[in-house]
Image (tube, rainbow, N blue to C red; front, side, top):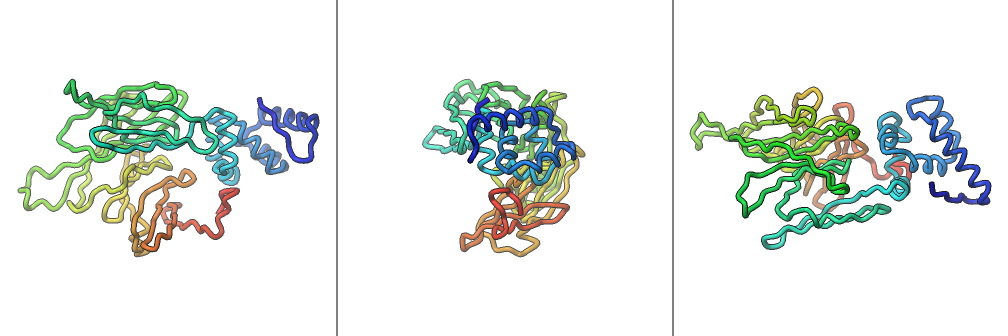
Length: 329
């Protein structure tokens, strides 16, 4: 394990400090109140160092069990050290479509290793992604004229799992990928699709039927749920579904959000902040903010705001009091 030195400490004293911290970390339980009290006695530099040396499982546990230390895991300095020490690949995939081709480029985040994704076929389309590094792809071979194929892949390891592709009267519009556990791997794929009502003349149809199907990696099967009827003028508008809190969210064109809970397998419609506050927005989209559903809006004067959904209400993140160093607000 790499050693670093702290200010005003000799190399020998620094080694003693980190040796004690490693023993402390090995026996540390983030679910224990006593251990949390012990951790609070350390300096912020040592706390950050301990967090940057934990496993991915512990890192996720901290975010779920303790608000203060969970917020600290979003600190840019902590994430940078964590990525460097644990060889984590983190970043975004930028896609552009020149004539009759698709080019993708992986842009690593600060402190992350680069990764080559040029081996992915150009006929692959990214349908959904997860923060765990899994991607949902749709693939077809234009020369072979084969049916489309869905597969979940982890680009850092090239491991792929093929899943059955659905053929039905519904037209797929949006996909979402939710990782339940990583070891063993358990994920769910949600597909939102729509169809016109078949029992009415086209000129008289003023609504569409939307359908949700759920694929589980444990059963390796798709399951269909009751149709959702929406006005024909309403449709999903966000580029990718928002995930968080065990639910998948689709932003609709009438400033409402379709929420589907992957555990209870029930859906509800909730109002977006633009409807509640009568905002005049230039653009908006759903995001994940500290593992919660977030709503990013940009007004005509290019000012932006983030609101998060907590306890069935929208709370605005005040950037004037937002502590970026500790991610507290």
